[in-house]
Length: 172
Image (cartoon, rainbow, N blue to C red; front, side):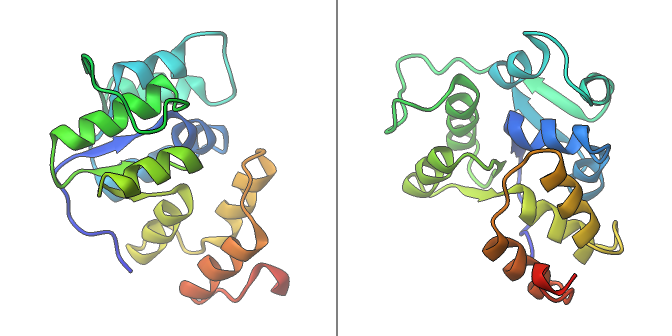
């Protein structure tokens, strides 16, 4: 299923961090154009030391990633264990109907489901990049993401690779 056109693309920190670690942050720009993050997500990305790929994020923040100040006021997510970045991203999506969240955190995805929000995970972004011709194969990028320490189950990889005609992860 292709990602439908939407009003606002809102990314959480996790997918941005892993894509920058593997040198592929630009895939988000290729697939979606401009991407928004909340100020809380920006704080997660820039505060507390450095990580591989952080410079790429800083460059993107000066270009195609837009940080948006979000005041959630008294609003609270159904799951009080969500972090500030996930909470503010979900709140922003609620304020902008038709938005698409990019997030992988399981609790955040459950919250988005419960609230009827559109979201896609990192694997979905990679598959959309392949569908649109921005990458030739999904498998090498998904393997790089795994090697960078991002958990992707074998079952998820099998389904994803089969979806884009690349077999399964067990057919390496």
